[in-house]
Image (cartoon, rainbow, N blue to C red; front, side):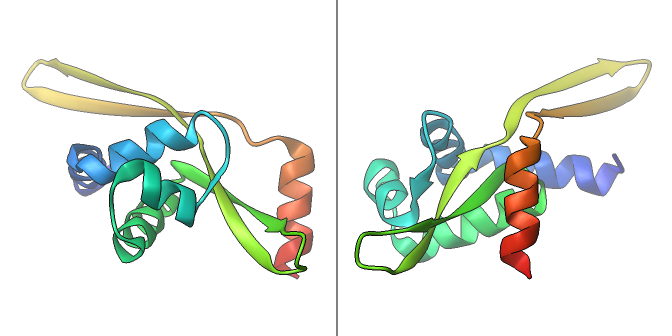
Length: 113
């Protein structure tokens, strides 16, 4: 990762709401409404953080269908860990993500069509 990418990752993980989303969505996929309740934030705040987390591939979304026939998204954490190494006058950040299930990847490709 570049220095700018490293800094963006650290800034994102410094954010209390981004961390809360990652923690809550690691339990099970959750909708924005559920994340709003669990994280104690407004829906616009949750949507902004999810957008940032998706940019870094820290969360993935799933399309769900409710009993009324409406579609909504749920989000699940992909971030597994972040390792920071400092030495020889440099800092290196490694990000580890959970692999996306091939069936989920195929479904996502199909839904995007």
